[in-house]
Length: 538
Image 1 (cartoon, rainbow, N blue to C red):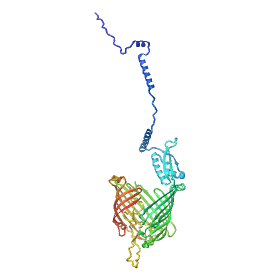
Image 2: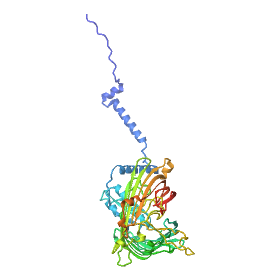
Image 3: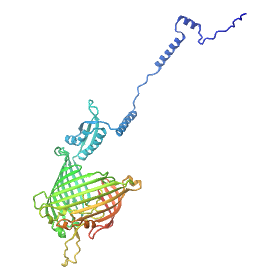
Image 4: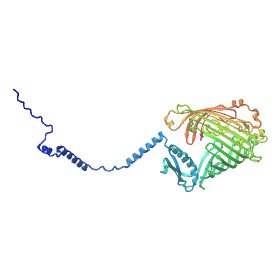
């Protein structure tokens, strides 16, 4: 007998439908899902209509500054890390109303050879310095502008100058010359750019309390007739008092012309009439023989190269200078005829401790007459070498002149001055007149200097440092057949030597030294002794 089937209710539908739903389905109108979609679209449209449109962003001055700063920082970062190719299309000159264009263009000509922005910036600084050095502009401004649009990668350089408001300037001051017996008052008056060629006309004087030491006038053209070399012409009247050291006064008047002047080369022609006198009437026989008039017609050439990091405190690098002079370029019988040669060498080696450095140098010079009978002729007294004085050999490159601690013209060959009779006619009771320093035809000096920082930061920040030094030098006569008796061994053994220590204060553009000197070796008439001293050098 079959069992009756059990009743099983249908499972509930997952999407129950109402009658309305059934009716919609039957009618095929999209049903519930289409209605929900329409409702969502309407709501989105209403939200879009209700949402306000974004207002345009307003750039504040602060944000503009930040953006500009960010661009500049990016440019600087790029300039430091990589070369930026850039060529100069043209150099534009503005602001010059009197100065000729060719003068500024010649100074800025190097800009047209630049190929990178870094090179343009570096050369622009040099051009700015050179234009300022002409002394005819109150200000110089160099800017970079974009080049023509059709020439990408190019730039125009704008040189804008402001000419001096007044063509007249002057200076006056009081000075004490270590080589002279008295102080002087010195002044200079300049007229600038009168003809628009960058020309400088000046007159200067130096007045001692009892005489005029120097009076001169000259003109300077930085680019004469478009050449790359300047032209200097100067007329002078010079008086120097050497009575205290060598019993004579020198007075000269004449003309000097700078034929060539560049960074490493100088060529000067001098024409002067010199007069040596002895107002004291105490001069030695060698000095008296040279009193009177003489004509100086000479050509002097100087080659100089200085690769030191500083002239006030060299820590690394070297410097070399050589000066050659030939005198006697005139047919006059009173013309001084001689050859003169000077050589200087300086070298600085860093030691790496307390910014210390070892500087050493050597200088030498020789002067010798030429012409008929030159072997028996003396060299001109004013053109000989004299050692001593208050200058530092570290900074100067002017031949053999200084041995630390010795007074001006304080060593070398000497000769007794004339002995005057006393009132009763007895020469033995008369006071000792002393000696004349005659200088030398051959001179050699050498020095070594160890500089180092002080441990205190206050001194280091101001460049004040200490140094320990030693120097030596000697003079010898070669003329009037004296060279026949010259002995190198004797010359070296008679070197004067000195040592010392001190404090160096760099005061731009001077080097101030406060030193203590001790003479290791000297001779009877040498003017040197242990002492404290102050020196100024440029």
